Amino acid sequence: QVQPVEFGGGSVQAGGSLRLSCTAPGFTSNNCGMHWYRQAAGKPDEWVSTITTTGTTYYAYFAKGRFTITKDKSVDTVFLQMNSLKPEDTAMYSCESSTNCGGIRGQGTQVTVSS
Image (cartoon, rainbow, N blue to C red; front, side, top):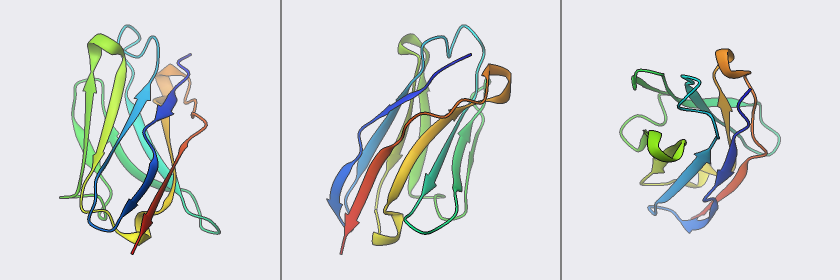
């Protein structure tokens, strides 16, 4: 099983950028994919993006063109670069390992975007 830990959340103004990190020891050696999710206060959990074992990426409609998911195998880390942030992007962002690696979600990191 792969236990992710997220870093990089914070507070930014609308239009700003943040890069979230998801470090998961064993991510590379176990051929894991990784998903990013977010949950805003009072709203349901929402899928954001996925990167597969082969590096194929997928994005939710609201993330396309603004968010970029990448991975650095050398440090077992997946990144989510978020640009042109909007107040509606405010949420707790968490990463989750793919099913073949246990489907474990980290504790999350808070992103707050002010107008």
